[in-house]
Length: 260
Image (tube, rainbow, N blue to C red; front, side, top):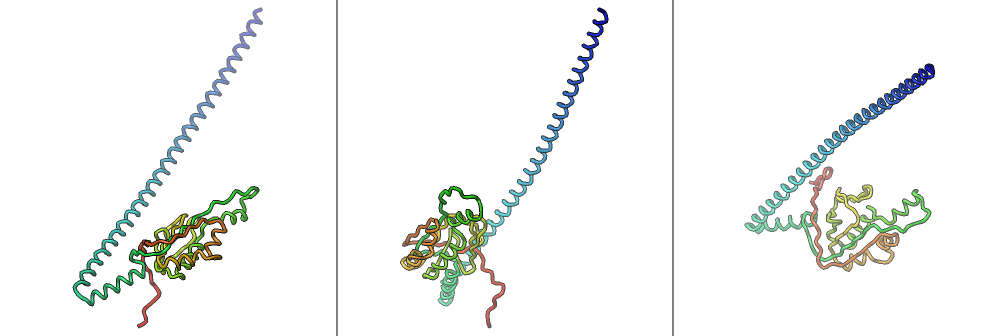
């Protein structure tokens, strides 16, 4: 009886030790997990803080650059205004100076440095909405299919060329004046005109004889008809009064020289 009692107590002691050992292991694992989680949170907070600091610095740099550009542009506009006042004063004091001022004004108008208005047409071209095509995979064929519904840089170039050929005297695309040095190029999903990023819809204004401009664009078999057939949305309207913005860029001439 005593032996049975001792054996029972020994078994209870062993079971208790096992329980303590299991509890100890669990506590250790929990402590390790908490420690790892704390380190992970600290690391994430540090990374987030560094990223936030970098973003703030970038935003600050962009803001300063934008502010500097706006200030410089405003100074340019103020200087041009002062120059115009001086020209006007000189022109009023001399008939010869007045002729020169008139010539300068005409040259500025031709160069695009003057906001102009007159009769013409407005054209709006915008990306179409592709129809759902069952069974299409995202491959080159499908990309080409979607591309048909989009306005491309080549489309705008073709329209501008047809307008100039029809006698347009001033053209702008989404407010960007088209001059002899203007560029129209593709930049991903957008188009750059005069190095400015523009997106669909594209509103083209052209000053000239409305009937000639309209007839050149909407003629049967013309370029606009082929764009519409491909899926691009187009609207053309004659206007009695159109305002075309002035060119705000700078003409760069590095290689040409006047022949003496």
